[in-house]
Length: 188
Ligand SMILES: C[S@@+](CC[C@H](N)C(=O)[O-])C[C@H]1O[C@@H](n2cnc3c(N)ncnc32)[C@H](O)[C@@H]1O
Image (cartoon, rainbow, N blue to C red):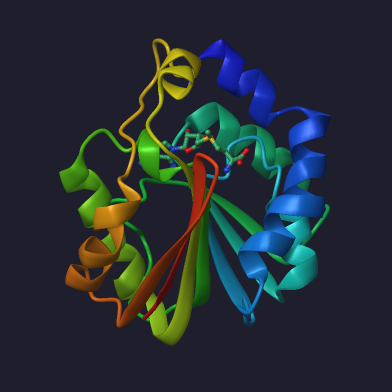
């Protein structure tokens, strides 16, 4: 991530928007169940709120610094949260471990479509049958490209994501577009 993204994702504003607006939108009509996997937790804007909504949270983060900082903040204070450093495309969990999985602004940080498809297949593998995968993404635009200057930005096309999720093992998948942003909801 670049400095702008690091600042933004760690800001109180983003944490507030995530808690008050984004998660309620993402969770409309979906249940997280008792064990949610958070993918690409970053500075943890959603982590504590997820632990309020689900019995248990496992937060996976690729960046060692983010994972260490978030772990120091929540691992002792909140026994229902576990922070792990790892890669969404190679998940270190047994099949059928989680009741749900959530990825907020993480998928476009995977460096290729192939890695995104590998992550989809891994997420499908670690979800129990009937488990739900929810993602929030931004569409391709010049503004979003500028915001990812010297960072990774491999935007997903909402029109093809449903077919990609079904190919990865999800039974039902849908997208919900809202002015340049979109939600993905898929059932294992
Ligand atoms: C834009 S940030 C979003 C962070 C957080 N979800 C939020 O909403 O504030 C994307 C995060 O995905 C993480 N990430 C990138 N590649 C990843 C991978 N292969 N596996 C897990 N996390 C990854 C980045 O390190 C970064 O923390």
